[in-house]
Amino acid sequence: MHTIVPAGLFELLHAASIVESFVESRLTKEGLSLAKLAALTRLVEAGDSLPLGQLADRLACVKSNVTQLVDRLEADGFVQRAPDPNDRRSRLAVLTPEGRTAQGRGVAVQRSAEREIFGTLSETEATQLAGIVEKLSRAAS
Amino acid sequence: MHTIVPAGLFELLHAASIVESFVESRLTKEGLSLAKLAALTRLVEAGDSLPLGQLADRLACVKSNVTQLVDRLEADGFVQRAPDPNDRRSRLAVLTPEGRTAQGRGVAVQRSAEREIFGTLSETEATQLAGIVEKLSRAAS
DNA sequence: GAAGATTGAGAGCTCAATCTTC
DNA sequence: GAAGATTGAGCTCTCAATCTTC
Image (cartoon, rainbow over all chains, first blue to last red; front, side, top):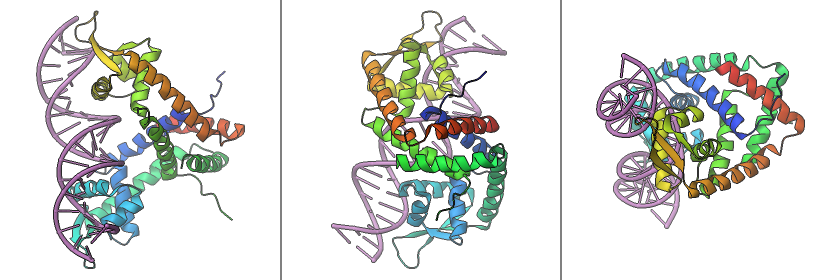
């Protein structure tokens, strides 16, 4: 027998960190990380370029974080900084061709990891999880 | 109307990060963090002291991480390093009185945050969540 | 003065290399 | 040589302070 303990804070956070590490380790093989993939994906969605501040908004993080993330993406050759013609204060993060293909490989990895992990859930469980996750997010906001 | 999208990777990780920030911000007011509280709690459970390597095992992290975490806890006055009488290679992390009371305040904060967040779930949902979390952890391990 | 971005400092984590003691 | 701990380098993230441009 094995009693299921009602999920608590640590169980939830620990599960999330396991899932995160799982995907992270797969992305590493593609020269990517979740943070980098998220940024590249926002750029693809925006049509290849975005002012850094906009990127920060869409990543739901602070601007100084994007500055450093884009530094690393630039070092990877996935992104380049360009001046904003409309506003000399602003700088654009522009996707390079390498960045675009990396993003493609990244989402493929992500989706396959997603299938692998969430594929173990029944249809019903997936729906339940969505509802619960929604409730928890709301309660902690 | 509002269709519930089946929970995916990003929804799950985002929810976890919201919950984490919620607790983290409450612990900040007590001069603590989730990482520090976890370490202090492991020490309390162990009866006030533990070799650093043991602490790393119980925190499920790498030893160099514990070295730095204990550095910060020592600076806070919550922990002190002591020589291990049994093995001169080893060093003990020893809880101070301040560390013990901080741990007490910390778990109180944690439990109240837990009630606040998980209290929004029905009995049934809490049980479902536990099962799902268990499945996901297993799939990603 | 306020909106862009960056820099500096620091928390939290990892890995690889090192140093001491077993 | 292997087990303890630490150090150095790097990733991800935050906040406060700064600098330029609006």
